[in-house]
Length: 88
Image (cartoon, rainbow, N blue to C red; front, side, top):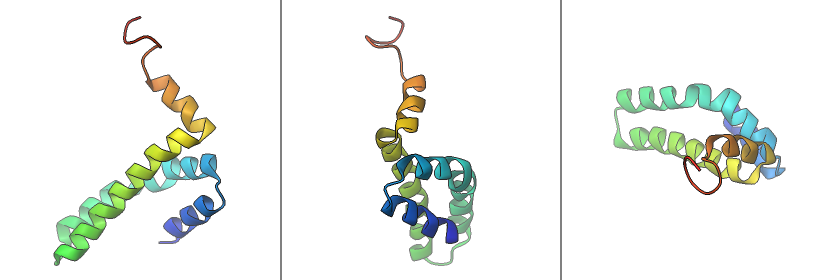
């Protein structure tokens, strides 16, 4: 897809915050449902696996980008418990 090629370009340029934004606002809006639909309708195990692998890769990549992107670190910090543990 063109969107995956664009994501590859962003990653090649080390544009981590932009890549994370693109994943959140574009790819992850449709790719999980698309992957499920392809896997459900695929006539071969190869395409079922490829659909699932593509979704898993995008989800995993998003997790990595949260760790390396300043914007991602800010988002992750909002989701994590306070320093010292939950309720402290």
